[in-house]
Image (cartoon, rainbow, N blue to C red; front, top):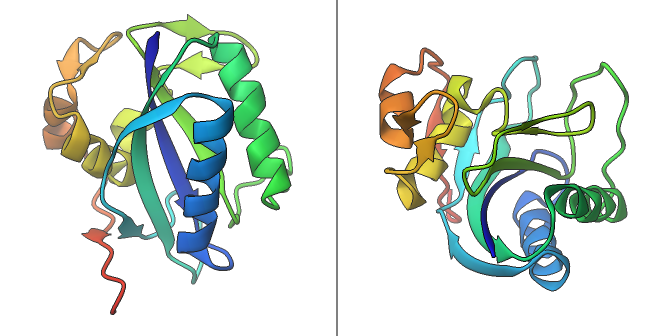
Length: 164
C-alpha cells in the first residue's frame, strides 16, 4: 500500500460541497482516506481572481500505481465539472493534485511526483503541515515543516470558518 497525500481545491460554485464530493469519489475509486486537514481559505496563486479557494490536504492509502491514481483523479475532476485549457491557469470547480506518493520520485510527461511546486505554495504547505509536519520531501531531503519555514510565498492561508 502506498501513502498518498492529495491537495484538493475549489474556487467556483459551492466550494465545500465540491471538496466533499471529490473526497467521497476518491474514497470509492482510489483508496481509503486515513486523515484530512482542516479546510483553508486561500488567495489564488499565480493569477488574479476575485474568488478565494478552499483547500484541503488528505492522506489516502492505495494499492494503485501512480498513473492509475492520476487517471481516477482526472475522471473525478471531469465529472465534477473541471474543464482544462492547456497553458491557462484559471478558477476551477475542483482541482486535485498528487503531492506525495510514499517516497516515490517520478518525472514523466504525464506526472511528476512529488508535486513540482508544492514547496513554493503556502496553500499547499499549511494544510500538509497540519497532518504531516515530519514528512520528508524525497528530493529536497527536508521535512514539510522545514519547507514551510523556508517558503517565500506570503499569500494569506486561513482556516475556513463555516460561519464567516
